[in-house]
Every structure is written in C-alpha cells, then in structure tokens.
Length: 124
Image: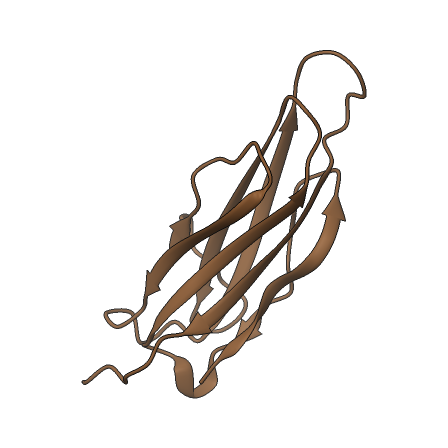
C-alpha cells in the first residue's frame, strides 16, 4: 500500500512543483489525495494539480486531477483513479499561488499534499 506525501508541509510564496514519486506496485490503482492548508493570508488563492508520467520525464499537457481553487485553511480530498491509466508510473504535484488587493504583494500558504492508496487491487 502506497501512503506518502506528494508535497510535505511547506510554506510557499510562488508557484512550484514537487519531486516526482514512483508508484511501483501501486501503478494502475485508486488513491485518495488530501490537501491540508494550515496557513493563509487574506486575498490569495492556491491551486494544486496532480500530474502523471510514464517515464518520469514527460508529464503531458494536462493534469490527471486538480483541486478546485482554495482560499482558506482546511482539509480537502479528491479521488485519483488510475485503473484505466496503468502506464502512469510516476506522480508529481504542482501548485500556483495568487494574491490581490492591499498589503504584502506576495502570497503566503503553508500546505501539504498526501496520497493514500485505497484498498483492493484493480483487475486487468
């Protein structure tokens, strides 16, 4: 069972991407992806997407899944079903931040993204 962080808790002020993780035996399975936001400032947004790759080098032009844009602290989850994408062997998370209005022009978010393989194996 795969259970790990795609993004360990960190504080960011700009867009970025995490290090890729290898799925190994969990390739082609279903996962629960959890986004935990523990710190925000007013008038800002966070967008997090999950990308897949067959070889760890080419990531395609669109994410496999994405959280809706977030503005507040809290916990959010989404399902990532790779049962029809068994060729995806690597995952990586990307994030974008935006800030508007008055005050400090830089956004500031503290968050993490974890992934948990769901019970049961997919059948071929």
